[in-house]
Length: 110
Figure (cartoon, rainbow, N blue to C red):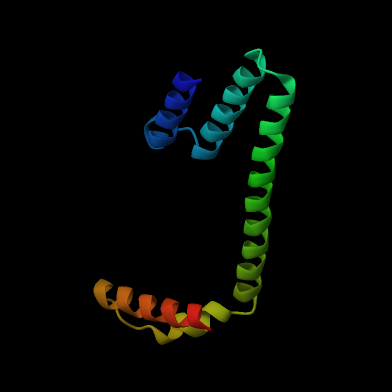
């Protein structure tokens, strides 16, 4: 399993040279590692418990991302981002970093 994980990690890191998307490499690596874990002969109850635990964590992250992407799409559909980007006129990267940092800090305080 460690060898498959390392190979999968390398496939993710070398996405551009091998021309395979990171998501595909990660999914294949995950499926192969879980398949080896199931076929390893461990206790079925332990395997089921671990699988359900990890699936619940992954699903909670996916539900959060689904909600967050929905909010972003709604703001974008109503041109909420253009209100902010129209006010930023600088081409200086350092100044832009400070503007975005201050805006982010104060928006998180609300």
